Amino acid sequence: MNYILNRSAAVVLTVILGVVVTPALSVAQKISPLMPPNSHAFGKSFDEWNLLQTQYVIQTGLGGLTGVSDTVGNVRLLPATFSDSTPVFDITLRPGTPFVASPSFLFGERYDDPSVPDDNPGDPNLKEYLDYVFKNTLIQIKLDGQVLLEGSGEDLKALRFGPSYFERPIYYAVPQLRGPGLNAVAALWVVGIGAVYGPLPVGQHTLVYTVHNVFGPPLTIFTYHITVSPK
Image (cartoon, rainbow, N blue to C red; front, top):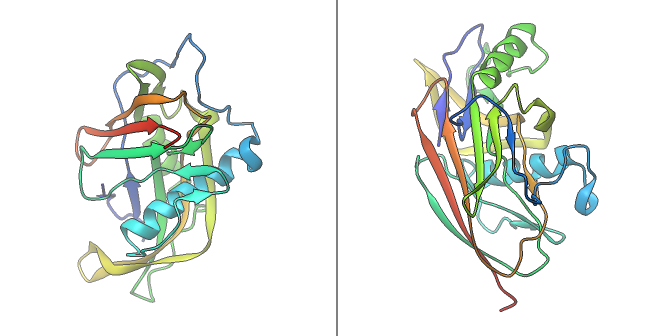
């Protein structure tokens, strides 16, 4: 899913997974598989895992890379898409496998016009705009019919990661139009609301990200049908 923000002061960002329905924070009463954001679960920090997962999504979705591993150690990086607002993914995990899937993220870019500077997350105007976007973005995560998390980006700011630069720019397979005579050629850094999950019990599970955003498609629903099986 690819939403282009209006370019202001030579800034364009791309947003994946917009986000949801009620601004009040809601955390499930039952034990949740979501890892706390201050954790260092499965060998990396919360920020590091979400950086790796969003990098994987951009590399495969815009970078056109194939053969990129969706697994780091024992942790699975779940897929996403830039072209479908209601995708359904079928995922098979072995028992004991944690996984990562950021429900909402934005990334800064590099352009083909040398007079247009790279997006800079330290720019005060851009920071103000990012804060506006997250404040007006709503997110819901539901697993097997149970709401694990729900609220605005402001409510969920403890789950915010980045801005973090990728190890190297992710160059796009095809330049992405960003305005008259202007194309983005690479993703440089990412910021977002993250989600790292502990292993699920053996069986069938359904993870749903429901998304409302301040721009782009008014509703996006990402559905992951997850089978946990030793086979």
